Each structure stands twice: as structure tokens, then as C-alpha cells.
Image (cartoon, rainbow, N blue to C red; front, top):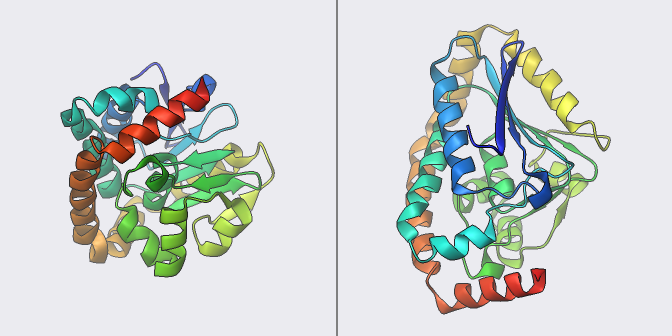
Length: 250
């Protein structure tokens, strides 16, 4: 595992913790690889009945590590590590639950679209800032988000890139239930443990039935987005946006 992704198993629930709090759990290539490996292992481990993912330190994830992405732009083949994670995530057979505190930005927000349940605190905030960075939506969000909320709302979220508060996200169907600040992990864990007590095959088959009609479309969206995303990394708009973002941080 990566130093910034920890894995534990509790009562049949695999718990994957994004543990890079000082960087608001920004995800690096090593973290992507660790998450991919953990999901692949869990999919074939009969002792694991469900997976919970959450962010340590009061933030779910600020998305991709921009400093690393500046280097990836010079070597875009490394994007294959991210695409592999997204393919494994989208095809994961077991229940996937997220506990969200604070910000879920970029891939921190789009990965929630692949979860079976999302439990979030009332202070949670979602944002899809790809266009602001000169990029395009990823993680099949260009397909999944319109399906969930309709084209107009999806366009607003993905193009205007404005922050979506927890109550609005719940009303849009992006979050199952809200809880008080600091309680998202325990609430999400309680749902995951409840699911873990149910008949395993019936749960797995139910998830398969729910996802099967759209699985091919999701995979096609991943490939389509990935191709354009890779091209955009070397665009003048993206280079300027990354430079401006890093300058503001300094």
C-alpha cells in the first residue's frame, strides 16, 4: 500500500482511508495504484463483503495532486495508472460506500458517482473544476452525472464548476443521507456493516442487475474522456491554468 492509503478490515468491511491530510488528501499516482490493488484484492476475497472509502482529517479529497499533474503533462502515458483505477472502480462487484467530510473535489467528487451509497456531513462540498483547469470531465462523469441529475444540472456542475453544498447534493441525488459534521465515517461504516450482514450472493447479483444496463456505456465514456483529457494536458489553456493555480498557492 501507499504511505497515504491505509487498509483495514472490520466485520467484513474493507476500509480504505485516504491519509494525506496535510495535502487535503490530494491523490497521487502511488495512491491510485494502492487503491487499484486494494479493490482488485477485495473483489476476490470472500471475507470482504463491502468496501468503505473515506478521507482522514476532515476532508474527503481535493482531487488530483496538481504538482504531480504538471509532471504528468510531460509524460501523459502515466495517465494509464489513473485510467486503470477508474476501470477497476467502475467494475467493482462488491458494495462500495463513501463517507464524506469537507471537500470532495475533482476525482474526489467523480469517484462518488461510482459508489453504491454516499453518506456525507452537512458541511460536505462537491466540486468538478475540470473546465477551470482547461480540462474535461473524467471518471465517466460526462455520462453518469447527466443520468443522475439531467443535462442542465450536469452542464452547470461540470462547466461552471461551482461548489455544490451537501443539502443541494442530496436533493440532486448525489448523496444518500446527511449527518452531522465529524460523523460521516461512523455513519458510512454502520451502513457498510449492515450490508455486510446481508446474503452475499443476493447483494452482488442485485448490484450487477442495477449496473449491467449501463456498464458498456460507462467504459466507453471512460475511454472517450481519457483520450481527450490526455490531449488537453498539453493544451495552452491547461498549461496556463496549472501555472496560475500553482502561483496562487505560493
